[in-house]
Image 1 (cartoon, rainbow, N blue to C red):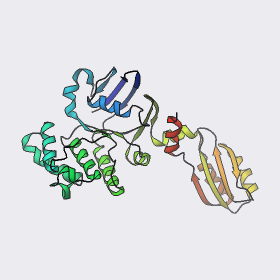
Image 2 (cartoon, rainbow, N blue to C red):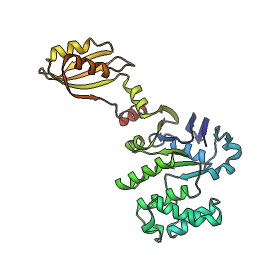
Image 3 (cartoon, rainbow, N blue to C red):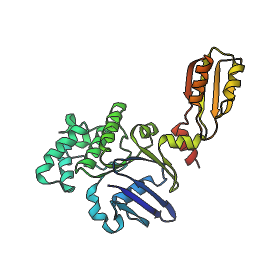
Image 4 (tube, rainbow, N blue to C red):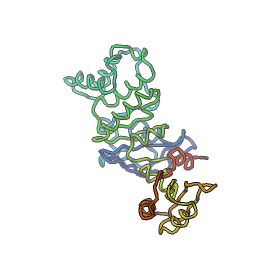
Length: 309
C-alpha cells in the first residue's frame, strides 16, 4: 500500500510541530525518517497510524483518507512506538496472542502467527518468561513482533533498534530489509549508519519542515556539489602529475601533498566525474595507481548541516 502525505500539519498549543509537509512512500520502499528531537517525526508517524488527529492536510493510504476512514485503515498498519508499551506481567506468548486477537487475526491462525513472530524476532528462548523479566533488547523484539503479528501492509517503526546489542541490530536490520520487499515501511532512528544499511530513501525533517529527501548517495552529491578523489601514483613526479591531471576536461582543482609527495587531491567540476579520465590518463602515461579513493560526505555531516539551530 502506498502512503501519500499532503500538506500535513500538527500544532500543540502555539507550537507547530508539523508544518505543511508532503511526501510519498511506495510499496516495497523503506523510508528512513530522520530529524533531531522535537522535529516532528513522531507526530507525523502517530498521525499516519491514527494515534493522534490531523490538524491540517491529509494522509492517503492506498488512496483512502485517514481523516475520513482512519479507523478502518488501522488494520493495515503495524506500529512500534518510540516508547514501547507492554504488559509487563504477561508472558511473551500470551501477550502476542492477545495482540493478535486485538488486531483481528482469525482464531484459527493466532497460534500460527504467534509462532512465526517468535521465530522471526528471535524470542524462542524467552517466550515463556513474563515481559517484565526481559532485557530492554528483548522487550524491543516483543514490540516489533506485536507490530507485525497481523501481517500488516504498512509498518511504522519509531526507533526499532533502541536498546539492542550490535548482533541484535544486525538481525533486526536483516528482518526489516526482508519485510520491506513486500510492504511499505517508515523507519525512524537516530543511528545514521543503520539508515544507510536498511533504508532505500532518506527524508530529513527539521522544525516541522522537510529539509532533504533522496537516497544517501543523492544527499551526499547535493551536499558536496563536487566529486573529490584522493589519488596516489607511482612512476611520475608531482609537478608532471599535477600538470597532466589539471588538463583533464572535467578536473577543476588538483592539489599535491607538500614535499613533492605522490599523493594528490583531485576535485572535479560540478556535476562531473573525473575518475574514468584519471584512470585512462594513468594507463596512457604508464603510471601506477596505488590509491584512488572517492571522498564521501558523511551522512552525519549532512544531517548536522541541515538541522543545526
